[in-house]
Length: 394
Image (tube, rainbow, N blue to C red; front, side):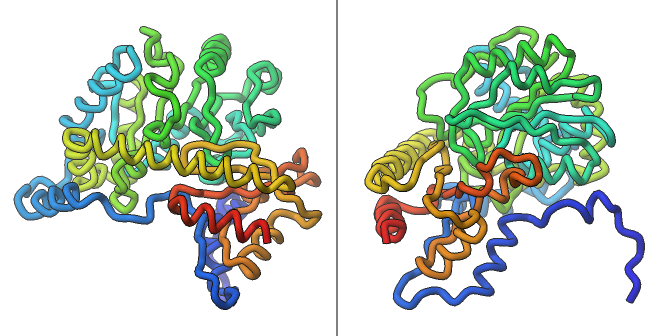
């Protein structure tokens, strides 16, 4: 059968990595006696906590508006709560008119890029990159200008400055980083903001994992700048904080003028963000601060367990560790995608290879893609992390 026309940009975009890893599971016979350690996807494996599920049940049965279309830019009460909490947390001023709610943080990224760039434009993206960001740029015909990071997985503003061209529309950063786990220092983010402002481009900061930052207090000063919204676009996800992954609830913070344009795109894509997810996020913000603090403490304890465990494996090198992730260099001559398949077949460990987060050497890469693995440790408790270390030692 002849296929009707297919957009070549879509056809050329690489397949979703997490779905690819799930196919590996279907194709692989696991070693007998070893249960699967699935450390591939950066998402909570558990449902929302019981109090939130109970609140969601009440919303479903008692709130008729939860089943109807709502405002394109999101529930006003949630926008107001985000504005108030972010103003307090970051020591700045965020107005409700600078906040929009989206159907997940990936949609927030797509909405931001749609307002900034089109085919033939360019966006600077550090490597290793978050694969869905790269996929969206490829599908939209926007060049991803890849910015290699240093040994600590931190991007260099001077190197980024050299990569800016007349086609550059934005610099996109993720902190705490996916896939690297590293937390970008506040001063580094200041430098990137200043660089973007000098060149009249946007600085996109994806803070999906901000709730699991290791530092107390504001992780940066960007929103304390009275003119922040002329340059900074901040993205956020409620999925990780409140385990609302299936309810697709995210946020974008930017200028009201930009949100006026973004509203057009959101209206044609989803009409409005999911109503139940928005109400659940608001209830979580109002009632689950202590629970979320305990979740953060647990994730930080797992981070420490990863660091301690890999310290006993001298042939493995941790390049970055934080939030949900450890980004490690494996000790084998084999390319990382083959190593990942071997780990699944021989040790029942499912992780993602560096080949899913950056270019190979023959594509202009620096060799990191071939030698690294991303371990999403948030879904392994400390016993599970100890088991991972034992399996890698073998």
